[in-house]
Image (cartoon, rainbow, N blue to C red; front, side, top):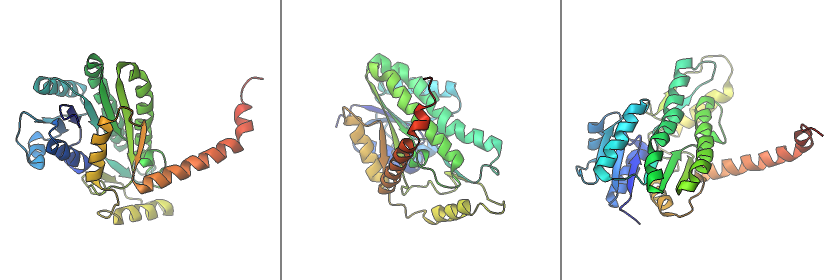
Length: 279
């Protein structure tokens, strides 16, 4: 592996982000990583090595703060080869009961911060004529589950953004992948990473049952964060990484079933679809 590459990882103080940063540093990469608290991030990573590790306190909803962190990374390491937009959180509840501001908040972090990070790093990668962007999506952005409508909407947006930005920047030698995992054994289902909106309205049994099933699975998810981090490193070395990468057996099965169902429906309604054009 080319360990001279510089990685920039958001949302690195816990979960998959923290696992990835530790793995990268173990393999000799130089890493800039963000959190709301740089000191807490340093303690979590457990490494004091200013030559290879740059912990950054970054407000991802502040474009000026993002731009400053990019400049700090360039000052420390001279380049940015891989951006991992990992910061984000989950939300479950009925759309009737989720406050409008809470909806805006999760879009700010899961979608707008991702776009802002890409916008800030692209001038660097264009000047280098190389770079790799990994945006964290979710299988929920392609195949949703009851109660996850708002979260799924944010991850669908991240996937659509990734698809088009990949077309935009291909000519500059910049590659893009959206990673869409199913359940991994991180803190995603804990109060630190999940906004849990109580379902008090009578009915909505599918939402309530799904919520209970997901929460009871915390700590038993089949996805291995260490393996995911290794896959990220392998992707960065691949000259032709995938546009979409579903991670986890559950993600594979859910995506496969959705694709098959969509194909059947598309063909079933083909005459109506093509019949909408002028004749």
